[in-house]
Amino acid sequence: MMKYQLKVTRTIKVSLFLLAIMVSCLVLQQFFLRNVDHNSLRIEGFYQEETDSLDVVFIGASDIYTSFMPGRAYEQYGFTSYLLASESITSEGIKTAIKETVRTQHPGMIVVEANAFLYGDSDNDVNEAHIHKFFDNLPMSENKLDYIQNNVPVDQRWEYYFPLIKYHGLWTEYPERLHMIASNLTLDMRGFNYLKGFRTTAHVLQPDKPCLNSKLAEENEELDLDPKLEKRLMDLLDYCDEQKINLMFVRAPHYVTKDTYNRVKRSNKMASIVNSRGYSYYTLENDAQRIGIDEKRDFYNVDHMNVYGAIKFTDYLSEKILYREELKVDPLSDEQKENWSEVVTATNQLYRYCDDIMTHTDATKGAQEDVYTLLKLGDYSGAPIERKD
Amino acid sequence: MKYPNAYSGVKKLFTSEILNIISAVLMFVAVLLALLDGKSKLPDVDSAQFWSLAAFVLLSAATGIAAFIIQIIGLNQARRDEWYFNKALYFVIICMVCTLVMTFTAGTVNSIFAAVDEVFTLLVNIYAILAIFTLAEYLKDTVIQKTGKIMIVVITVLFGIALILQIAAGFVPRKAEILGVIKSGFEVLGYIACMVYFGMSKKMLGQS
Image (tube, rainbow over all chains, first blue to last red; front, side, top):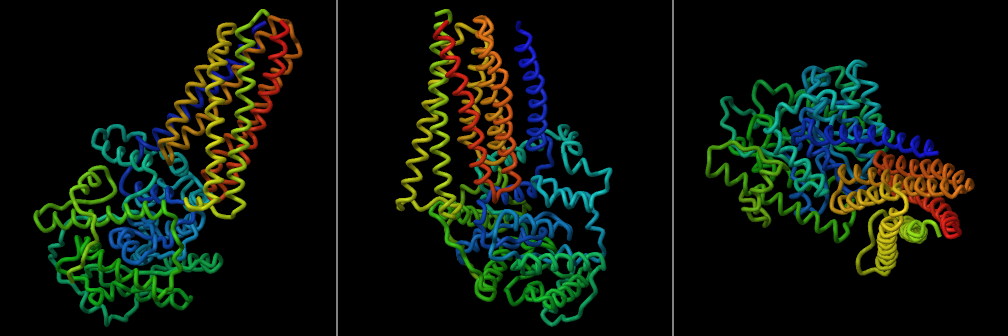
């Protein structure tokens, strides 16, 4: 008499068991057995932004997420932005990031930092670590599937579908990983990112090579891009033409030495290509001195500016975006304004925190959206930063 | 009456399903109003539209909470006569925990608990139907037994589709509101199916 009930309850028990395994794997993959770093926090934070709430999305590598401060741009110029960027992002990663931006936001402008196309060869585009740093943090979508199917060798695809397969061994790295796990959890529960992807290091570069930035304003020579990277740039421009995307390119300032001088020439070449297709390209690396970038103070290494440089770059580029590119800024609701007010406060606190370290200590400290850094920010004022230059 | 506790309990489950339907319809109207306005953001606090939307949302929440409380009382009563109601009560408590976690979280944690809540809502209803099925076996009511089997399949399909739509909304953020509305539609159909079955069972138990 009880056969039917037994059949149903057994089916339910088996289904619940399978569901429990699935949910456990999902939770482990999302929070605990996952390579959580600043890239993860930045990219996840992007997907927490309200749909169609960003005026500008910046896409690129560390050059942009260490240079542009969205909190400063909002405070001084009134537009909202986010840094959808990943360490050494590949050229295909740039295209996927643009597609994801179009899928989730309708920004008035997308700004691409040129770094991914300026390497001397296309090795970065097949660097597994750099690919994983970006793609592992994207939610599953048609764009992600498209990338995996067109670019990842067949024997590696399951690692991209289920990163748990690649990172299941990370449990051996506890308890060191705990603070980033905690940062990920708190970001998830808070529902928004305080720094909108900005990351910096509190350090002033002590260079051992002379800086050639003073020569760059006059540098017009061009060097060809790597053929594969140039083809990907063309594909990207074709895609943006098709989708009628308001796209702009920028090259952030660097501490240019003899070793990296060819990159400047490739940037000039890229500017010619991009301009010929009707898009703007701001060679702010060449304009570093005009922006006021001080090579003795504003870099923390040869490739990245510290907060002193970032604030100048942010102000300069924001003016270009707002006035020269005539960005149309959408109004915000009261709740969004409140949210951005917290972003502005956190950004100003971060500036003062880094300034304190660089002025009073010899320490080199990374500063990003993690629980340690956010806790320390409470000791600093969130009032607007007055530039002394 | 052979099973007075089950009868009392099922009467309350019937009421609870009606309140669930009202709550879902009120929320459906609120979302529809917001969508028809063409904006994806909430209107400003000082606008009349905000307050009319808020009224629908508050009423929906109030009826939802009332449905939940009546459901717990009903299951607590009915479990004295049939063991499967006990299981249903445990699942209701899990649903309550899931709802609390969802209220205070965002992002992936919220999505996971929303999906778990959907699954356990289905299980509450399946176990309630199984309990009534068992009582119908004892009372030799073959109509209620047959209908019970059909209802289990029907609500599994309806809530299953609702779960899929909920997961799909995460992949298509621009269509999340529309998918949410369609999902609510399937949930309402599930509540109607349960309500019809509890109504029939109420009669059976009343006449026993």
